[in-house]
Length: 187
Image (cartoon, rainbow, N blue to C red):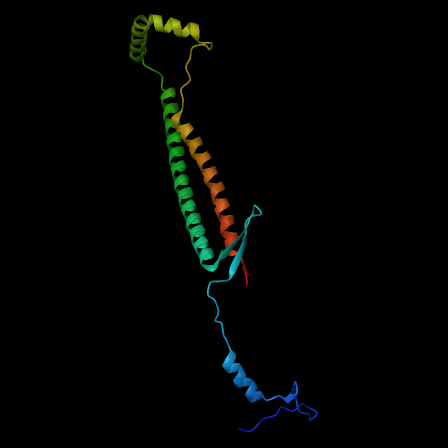
C-alpha cells in the first residue's frame, strides 16, 4: 500500500506534526475510532408563551396532546354556546307569546257574570282568611299588592349571563389554542 501524500497548492507536502499527512491512514483511524450517535427523536422542546406571561416548555408529544385538547375544548365550548343560543331563542319566544297572550286577555273586558262570580269568590276568601289578611296588612309596609315573579324573564336573564360566561371561557380557550399553535422550537 503506497503512501498517498497530500500536497498543498504551492507543491509542498502537508505535514501532520513531524510526519507527512496521509489521508488514507487518517480515514482508517477515523473508521476504527468513530462513535456515532443518532438523532434523539422527541428530545427537542417547544416554548409556549401564554397571555398571562406564563412560559412553559413542552416536548413534541406534550405539545401535540395540548393542541388536541385545546382544539377539542374550543369545539365543545362552541357547541355549548350554540345550544345556549338556541335555548335563549326558545325562552324569548315563550316570553313574547306569554306577553302577547296576557295583553289579549287584559284587553278583553270581563262579562257581568264573570264579575259577579269573582266578587262572590273574593268575599268567601276574605271571610275564610280574615285573620291572615289583617296580619299581612299590618306587617306589610307596601300597599299590599304582591309582585308576581316572571320566571320566563328570569330564565332569559340567567341564560344570557350563562352565555356571557361561556363566551369568556371560549375567548380564554381560543387564546390558549393560539399560543400552542405559535409555539417556538428549542434545540
